[in-house]
Structures are given as structure tokens and as C-alpha cells.
Image (cartoon, rainbow, N blue to C red; front, top):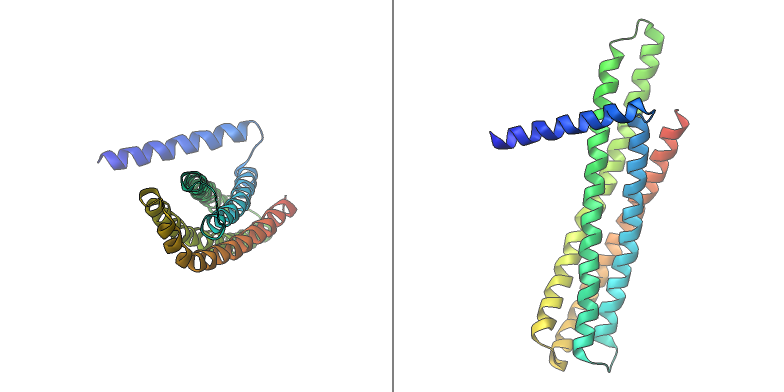
Length: 210
């Protein structure tokens, strides 16, 4: 019961927000473009962060010299930054889903308000194409998002292990995971680039239909 109330309240808040934005000339389509841009940018930033984390991991396990405590702190810092990037990516995707659902719901409802059959058909065709493009975009974004956890899991395990075993033997143990981590990061970066490219195309398509 409480969960239902909370969900209804959230829906009401979002509806009020979209209504307020429309009064100042910012429609759901515009908000969707903005949020897709934000999601794309968050994935681009995450790409760079995970590259940095992999490089830091490599320097910890392959470069000789330096205080182990300092190397641990540096790796832990990159891990925490990676977690923050992952959280931002997820939040941005959720924001895209929210406004897209609201836009498509409104669009479908307004199809029933047409009196001109040809205009209605044209709008319905535009809706179908936009939804198809959006589904592909969301699929790309979520595919990239799913690649994040395996990377974070490896980083988390190695950071924890190093935290409690600050010695040369621990560094040797971490070396064995470098190839696994590098492979996971490569897959993540490739999927993120696909999502970024898809977002660019989706943004262009929405803007061209204005």
C-alpha cells in the first residue's frame, strides 16, 4: 500500500514537472533530447573513467617500486570514481525512460484528437518510427550498463584483497586478474561506444522532426 502511494506520488510529481516545463515552452520531446544527451555524455565520461581505472590497475600490478599503501589508495580512488560513474549512467538511463514513456503516452492519446485522417496517419507513422529508434537506443544503453557490474566486481574484489594484504605476494595475486579485467573493460567500452553512437543518431532524428 505504501509503495503504491509512493509510486503515485512520484508519477504526480513528474506530471506536474512536465506540465510546468510546457508552460515555458519546453515540451517532452525537448526534454527527451536533453536527457538522451545527458545519458550519452555520462556514458562518454564513464568510458574515460573505466579506462583510467584499468590503467591504474595495470600500474599497481605491473610497475615495480612505490609504497604499497599509496598504490592501494590510488586504486581504491579509481574504484570509487568508477562506482560513481556507474551510478550516474544508471540514473541518466532511468531519466530517459521516464520522459520517453510520458512522451509516447501523450502522443498516442493525441492521435485520437485528429479529424484529418492523413495527418493522423502521418503522425502515427512518425510515432512508430520514433518508438522503434528509441527501443534500439534503450537496448544499446542497457547492454552497455550490464557490462559495468562485471568490471566493478573484479575491481572491488581486488581492492578489498589489496587492502588487507599490502605485500608483494598480494600484488602477484592481482596480476592474474589483469587479463580478465582488461577483457571486461574492452567489452564495456565497445558497448558504450555503440550506445553513444545510437544516442547521437536518435538526437539527430528527433531534432530533424521538429
